[in-house]
Length: 286
Image 1 (cartoon, one colour):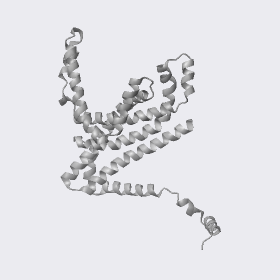
Image 2: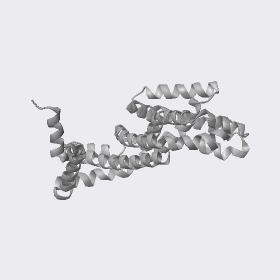
Image 3: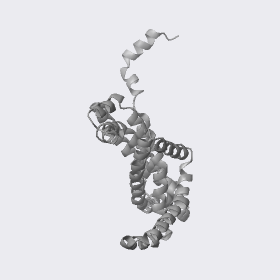
């Protein structure tokens, strides 16, 4: 039977064994897999062809992700302010939106935004254009608004609208948590200096809250990058759509899906390292 003293003695005799058990072997295995894929991209003709075809979707994926995330941040900030507002209408409308959207799958939100919200929004613009066209000073604007139609909005724009709609609800909860994490005395001190509620939020609360929510905002950026693969259902030529097209054209499932996974993993892993760096800087600042 092995006693505790034997275990202690074994740890003293082989101190490296205990340290090796803490090594990130998972990262080493992922790195080896990535090296194999990179080697095949440069050496194997099938992988080189797949990479050349699928990598064209990187620009679309990044563009959709950045645009949708920027809109989601703006929408989430307004919704987050509504979630902590004392205005009963503002609070309830914001809460209703957040609770509804968070309970619907992202794929459904993208389809709803593309085929319901965007056409409805254009119909509202056309109606406003009819009214504005009757006003002499702004009749050119009204006529221009009447000319807007659904054919002018491509599927990429509709995909951005759907992703922004969905992630605005998630960013609202991030901002709400960040605002509520600030001590109540900060608001009271700002009001005692003569600031109104809006000024206190703008100059005192939000700068501190934004610093605290930077890490979760970074994590959500990684999440929206991965969820951007869902826009392939709208035939947007992103990485996923081009991967599916390459697989259908060449019947090379292994090369197509390995290349897709490698491209997404490369982007998300790089962003994860950046988010961890930001978290360390924020923690050090505190």
